Image (cartoon, helix red, strand yellow):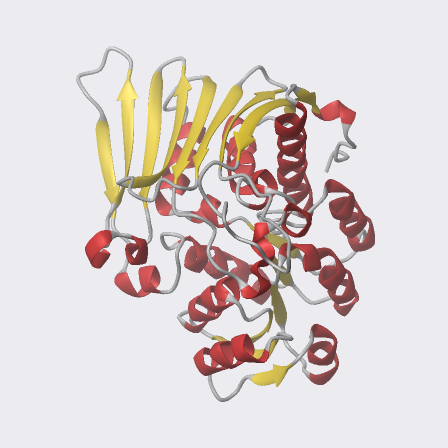
Length: 370
C-alpha cells in the first residue's frame, strides 16, 4: 500500500520533505498546499503528476483523502494549521518549533487530548547518524554518569524566505526558539532530565544589520551563549554563531561523564562548502586514562545527502514516521510534550538574554508529566 502525503507548505523546508518522501519505499506526495503560487509551482514540479495543487490547507483537507500530513509552513502558522488538522484523525508530522510560544504549544496539546492518530514533532537533529550513535553509547554507559553537555553550532546566516518572515522574532519565536529548539531537545534527550534554569546572552552582531522589510528592521539574534541547568544536576551549554559558515564542522556536540567524554562532529551541507565537498561526520569516544580516542566515521549515501540539508536526518526521520503510519499503532518518537519543552527553554533563553538574568522555568507554565 502506498502512503499518500499531504504537504502543507511549499518553501525550502517543505521541498526538503518532498524530496525525502520521494525516496521512501511505498510513499508519494498526494497534495501540496501553499498560498504563494511561485513556491507551490516549485514544489509541484518535484512532487510528480499525481500531486494535487491547493492554495490553502483548508482546501487540501476538503479535496483530498491523504493518509498523513506534513506541516512545513512559517513558524507562526503552525498552531492554527495544526488545530485545523487535529480533527482529521490522520498522522501528522509538524516541523519545529511546534509553535512560536509555549502558550501556543499548550493550546495544541489540550486540543490533541484523546486523539488516537499520532502527531510527531520534526526534530531532525535526533536522527543524524552520528548523534543517534552518540545517544546509543550514552545509553550503554560509555561515559559513565553524564555531567556536562555542550553544543557548538557555527553556521551560515538565516536564509532568504518568502516575505523574509524569518527575520522577525514575532514570527519565529526568536532565534533561541526557531533555531535552537533542536539543541534544547537534544540536551533533554541526552541528559535524561528536564531543564530548570536558563541563563543566556546574545545579540545581533553581523547579520541583517542593513536590511529593512516593509519599513521594519530585523530583530533576531545571530549569536548567543546559553547555560541550561537540569533537574538531575547536569548542565548544558550552547555556543551559537550564525556568521561562522567557514567552520569545518557546523555542529559539535559533546557529553562528558564520570568515565569518558564523547563528541560528535557534523559538517555543513555540501552546498554551503567550498567546492561542494560531501564530508563525513564522526564520533570520538575518549576514555579517561585511555590511550587515545576511539573514532567512528559516518558517510551518508549521496542520494540521501542530496535530498536535504540535515546530514541525512530528514530521510531517517521520515522512514521512522512512515513505519508508524503503516503500523497504525504506537506513539511518536518526538511527542507534543517534547516539542513543548523545546519551545519553553527557547522562550526562557530569549527572556534571559533580553533581561540580562537567569530565568527559572518555574516562572513559566511547565508541561505536565506525560
